[in-house]
Length: 359
Image 1: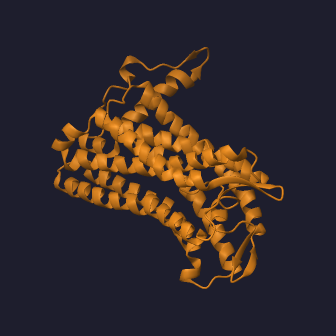
Image 2: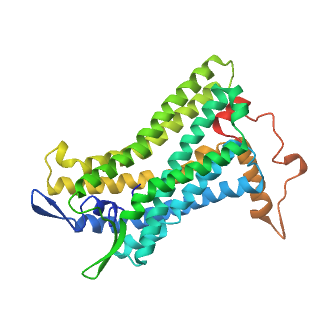
Image 3: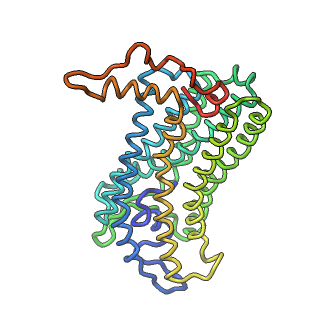
């Protein structure tokens, strides 16, 4: 998975655009593009960091505080939040890198942070896939789900998923390295000499497959089955549930498809159209813009997969009233009738709870 602040230092350099890009044997200057990215990326990533950190920390706190990890869906939600946090904690380093124009954290930190970034982003994708499959089993194959959706299965499947994530992120760790070029320190992806173009194209093809094609395929298959079940089910909440399905798929596509397309076109630009320096610079800017959109998805995950749940909102209100909101001299506490574990008459149906992961 690509590294943030890519336009200035890492992803575009991995694609062959560090300072100069040689198109048709003529050098193409990239310094104006890099200057633009150095100005725009730090504040944008600072916003993503702040919002994403707050949202995902609240998900982790609520899950642990109210001890609802006995539900398979919540185990996956916790791992999804951890994946987002793993990515988000690397952002301050990339922000500093983009602002200063060179890497200041050493050789080992370059590899470590590149690995954390990739693990976080792949983890986000894979646990969204697991959440989608979990909803599919709970609604379409309810009897089987009663036996299969256990805490033990959630722990084992999460462990196996993290092992897979580490293995998939190994290329980022192996190929990322800090280097000194005439006093300019950079953290870049350096592929083997001679086969650099092949490695770069394989690198982008892997990103496209794992971060877009695979999750979209799983979503289409699983949510199609869910919609068929909801249509047959005489439940007054089914239309709201189907709208939620549509929102989940559209949001994922809007956030990730443009970035994957921009990376693909950049890697294969000489194959699809006649290249020029101006065209290459435009693709660089497109990668920068779509990268910000894609990484903002880590801020959206808590909203879609947690905050939308009625019970989660109850727990959140309870938490803020008890530990955050302060009246003169004391905290506001819930009355017994406002206890978050109480299920109100307005709570979603069981079917909708299974669909949106309400806990």
